[in-house]
Length: 148
Image (tube, rainbow, N blue to C red):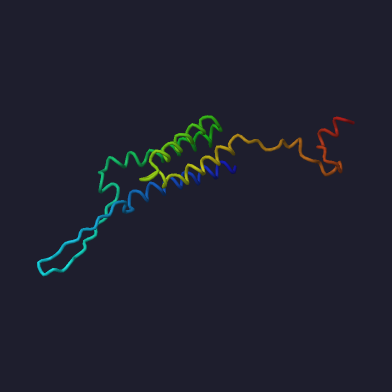
């Protein structure tokens, strides 16, 4: 259950990073202009990553969201630790390679995926192995009945 919650959080963090990268100003420029009267004017401009690079960059930005979604689907329904760890590795590699421009935005999602991958596949103790309060001992009811 904890792994599923972590996978949901990883998805939400990846989507939030994607949305932030679409609308946040990533580039800024200042231009100093001296007028004929000798007055200095500073003109500041900023642009989002899409405005600066074009719409093709949206495909690159949505890539980590897709990787997290695939990893979550694998971890949610299949409980395949190996496949989930592959997607975690892809996310961590993406974050490391593109750390300065966009990787740092997706890093929280990748770290939550690591925690989820650790949790997926862990088994809860079997109900038959839990302590039975009626026996007064730490033995399970199943084991104490078998020994009689």
